[in-house]
Image (cartoon, rainbow, N blue to C red):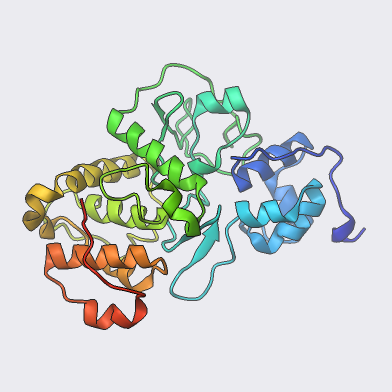
Length: 316
């Protein structure tokens, strides 16, 4: 039988807010197979990632629209600079999305039965509905979660995710999560629709831009800390992202009063990457304004030809 003729006996429809790879796991497990089996069916290696290149075949196998997979799976990685489209947004750093190390809300997994797409975003760390942290390890044996597991509610270790009492997430992260989810629902080219959801001056940026700002303000735990060159590509655990985002938000909110002292804490290279590589003009303007304000950089002459109109922004 040719690949284009293969279909699974049980057709499972995706939810509107479901993770692309999470849907593949949920659907293939309902059919008694695994993601490894799905890779063999699609003739890709055992560690290969599912991308839009597989959308037409996945649509045939799962008896679903290929267009849904084209939106819910990341585009094929391009040459430098890194650019990847997924969920209607463009991402500029490899660790913007959790393509290898998923995180879940255990209570949502049991009540909804699927993985939400917003959980694939690295800086999305809490569940607003249950006011708890997302977890990226088995609650029983504490082994890191993988996409390659028997079911969405079972770890590769074989343990079922048990609902129970979880530590309540702080209000600052819950507020930030609500802001992220409002931006996530809007496409990359439709950011104006979330401008009414004000979050300390970040509402006009793309999701990748918000990630860059929060990470650049939060990666350093102390002044002048030397960071590894892989900060934009390393796949950090949820606990590490929680620390980065909490620090970043705290520093960002206090910037109006102490921006002169932030030059030893903010990661300048991340703002420069945002200014030179992001194709969303508002992101570029924002990064240039921060570089001028915090580091006294002068990039306007160099970037002016790349921007539609470069003008000073009000940051707060």
